[in-house]
Amino acid sequence: MPRPPLEVGTWGSLAVWEVSPGVWNACARFRDVDGVTRRVQARGPSKGKARATLMARMSKRHAPTASTIKGTTRVRDVTEVYLREVAERGRAPRTLQRYRETVENHLLKARGGVGDLRLSECTTGRLEVFLQGIKADHGAASAKLARTVLKGVLDVAKRHDAITRNPLEGTSPIAVTRKEVRVLSPGEVQTLRRRLAAWQDAPMPDGRHARPDDMLDVVDVMLATGARIGEVLALRWEDVDLDAGRVSITGTVVSLKGRGIVRQDHPKSQGSAKAFPVGTPLVASLRARWERMASLGLVGAMVFPSATGTLRDPSAFRAQWRKAAGAIGFEWVTPHTFRKTVADRIDKEAGLSSASKYLGHSTEAVTAAHYVERVRAAEDMTAALAVFWEPGPVEAA
Image (cartoon, rainbow, N blue to C red; front, side, top):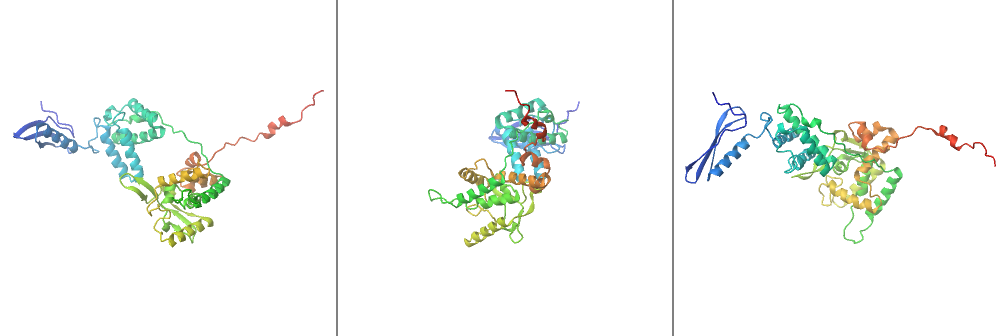
């Protein structure tokens, strides 16, 4: 009876022998991805090293591709195929980085991860325990992102017939608690702007470190456009038309592992790329900023550069903002609060549809859920309840 063929990506028994003193040879039959079985050899100074070199060579040789993913493939191997596909689909570098970090920090974690499970071992129950563990240790948001990434990984396996169904589909939905939307009222905006102007112009108590002198200008751009802080810090002078009174949002500043702070040539979402007409006060302050920077020989590409003239890190700005907000009595306000405030104001003046379009949201539901302050209005029952305040019969003395 003929010997059954090796499965693609596997090898047969290993033979190791000494060729000459201090030289060992290791050999095995390996079935390549094209279905052809070939002899693979390796040498080393000892029996163990020759064997280890051969194993490493064959392991690298059978790195998973679309044609080699099967039920016995480990999850960790499929993650690389998945991340390659995500990159090929043109996802933003920051998104790809978040997915890769989720793979490394959760899916492939040494203890509690699922990287060493074979695809055939990925049962709904095991994945439920895995996700609930992330939720308990790191919070619902991390668990939800891990679920998204793991679903993508297992979808790759399903597309290549390694599994017949995605076992993640039976796991519990992960709900992230939404914080109540809080925005600034027009009066609070005016007070904040006044206090912020006074704070950034006042000398530091120790006289050694100057405060950032552009905090108010950054806030004003956010209030005029509803843009995110990374998008405002990505603003270049070529994006600003002072004569036309227009500011164009064309990119965002992100931090990428291995590359540092970079300007991404598109905003966070496709709908956010647009030219915003802005009012006279902002035009005046931006013109003054240009003239001030020009007089100091500091005009470069960026409208709001770092202290050294480079791209400004959004995280660094947030740290500066926390100090300023605490000093002026608006501790609860974050840079994103201004985007919500813009959405809420437009919603009240022109409706939810206009607010959603202005911010570039994909649907009005996103705007309603996360960006506008909602107080449910009760039906007017004043007439029915007025009886409580009617004089009624006069009681006998």
